[in-house]
Length: 142
Image (cartoon, rainbow, N blue to C red; front, side):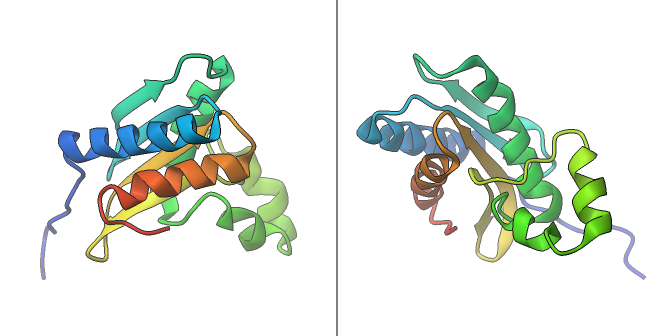
């Protein structure tokens, strides 16, 4: 019986490239964002609050990144996952740090989750577009 397993995690260099690509996209669409990248365990690895990004966006970006790695799915997928299940719908949304709208994605490379990204500052659809640009910087897809 195995007693341990290997788990990969995003490097600082890769995390920073995700932040940089995300910020570039946010600049292109003209919406200042807060951008958080966490490692595979949910610890903040890289972060940026663009000039003009809302203060609340700081916490929400970190929550989105954590939510994405906590279950291995994008934050926008949570709504469909819980909407028709009353116990989940009325219970899980009370969990601290859980976000159920778009802008957070697990970062998966070669089929393995290495971290997560959370983006906040615009409408969640804008957050998603920017996060997807960040994912592309490390060869991950949404």
